[in-house]
Image (tube, rainbow, N blue to C red; front, top):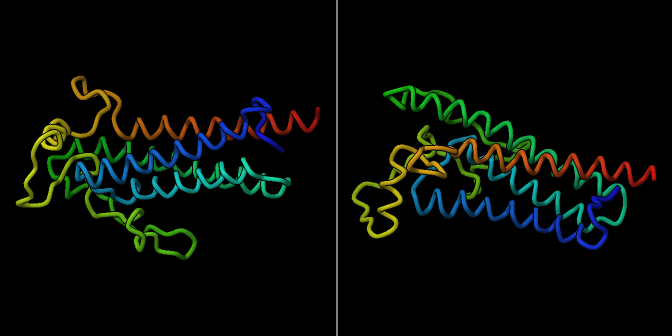
Length: 200
């Protein structure tokens, strides 16, 4: 079973999907967390893990030489895409709850065990979750000097992260839903095309 949009470019497209998933991880960890001080709670941290699983699945499919490795690749890809969609939906509820509450400490379900099978993902810095519900609001450390573009961006996102700040449209949960929706669509389409190709 192969993902065959085009015989010549299918592997390149799969590798593009893997790299693109990796870039979203960098966006979340390097830009949102380390540059803008938006610390992830359980769902945001899990999103990064789902992106990594998804990327690994795309690589498996791209270099698969037999049906078993292809099926394993698609399973990892779908597992990551579905997990990401579920987390994005949870983030959407959290996003609304944070803005409906004057006391963000009163918003529940921001913390919890972040595990894969029996492994605690909090042991890995990339997947570590924090107990803050304000996942898309910058919270710089006390007495930390901020200047230049960093200060301007933190000021712009004081009410939350939006792709279009001036109109406050396309929130972070919505963006994640679009990203994982694309990956899920490509995965399902790949499986369908694979079955059609086999039957042909």
